[in-house]
Length: 175
Image 1 (tube, rainbow, N blue to C red):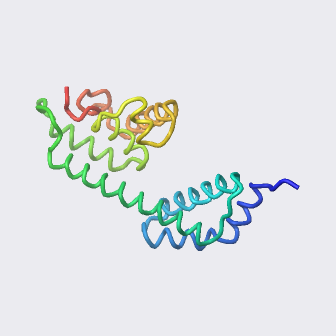
Image 2 (cartoon, helix red, strand yellow):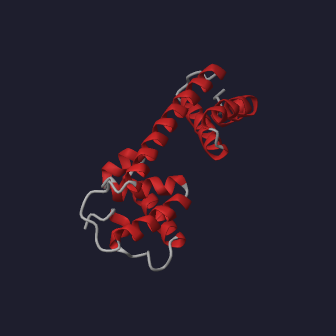
Image 3 (cartoon, rainbow, N blue to C red):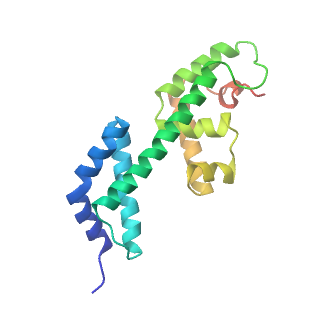
């Protein structure tokens, strides 16, 4: 009789999701991030079960630990990048009014969803494009392009009208 992987993951989820979520939350102290990482743990468990490998609570916690470590490292990188941006460490000679525009951009970025902000910063401040952007995001090129498109639209929705379409906004002043 074939194993129903979906049912096995559902059973694991019912039995251990609370424990995994508490473990993750205590380390990231953000409910949305804890929810996302907990879901990632069970997505990975589902993939593992499809390869006929065993999954138990210690494995789930070990996977959660690795995902939390990745998240903590990513947070540190984001915080350092944000600090560099705030300190005016963006390369290139600023255009007139650059400081006002940069501050407005930073305000909008601070209000965006973390995922959208990350995609924009990777694309425009770090200069990742195409396959490189996809590799950093851990997805295919089409998905990366789609995520960048959605992030641009989110920025445009949140930004004041005079800020949208400003060349300096999206390239960190590197024109």
